[in-house]
Image (cartoon, rainbow, N blue to C red; front, side, top):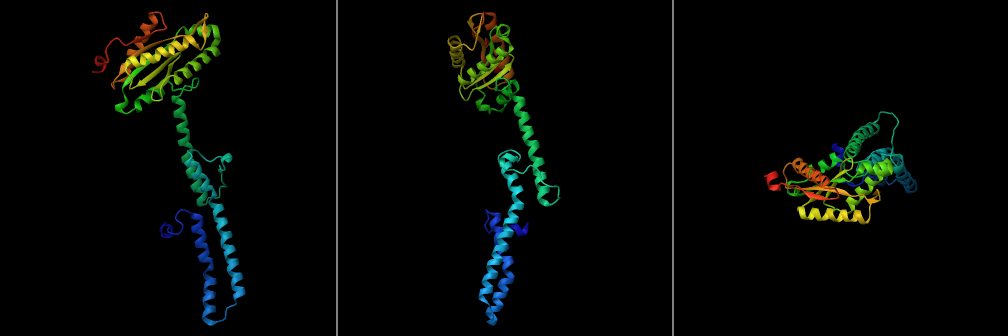
Length: 291
């Protein structure tokens, strides 16, 4: 370690060049001694000396190429780690090494073991929080996104949305058709909300939206525009009528989000009891709900 630090002034950003400089100096030490002796005694054969210099430089270059090739597995692993993945053959990585037990193989194996669990954990976390059918967050993912918001951004409106008569959708269009409707509806929500808003599949044919920094009027207008587009450009039809949705809204001002969600769900139930294809707001003011 001390020698590595002591030589870091030589090409600090290139280990290959530093190795070449060290190889060049060390392999030329006998030749430099010979030149010094020849100059001191006046007995130096310049033609032979030049040939020796060129041969020594060629040997140093060969040594550098060999050392660089031995270090390639480490470079491949570092590059792969920078990209957040383990080395793969198609990316020029080296997936396995001979079990020779040298320091390169040990270092490579250790870093590979460290890389794989981290990638697998990330993939599992993503899968656990994403709805595979629609590609948006599932209930767990939606709540996790809310939980990661800073306190100052926990202000807005929570909407719980339910596709009307979804059992009839499945009965008339089949389950594949129902899945297609769910996917199209999720895409419709994504395209008609802002980037700062959060959407998720709450479960079954229910979806959730968090309208960040929005008052109930703004959230209600947004949902009304979606409802009108559903009538004009339906994602499907049941009994000849465009598929519609019902929604419940509740303001959220940073208190327990479960309370706001419960009020939005209660407003949704009122909308469905009143005939569906409606948007209802929570009855109690948010100041009473969260204090």
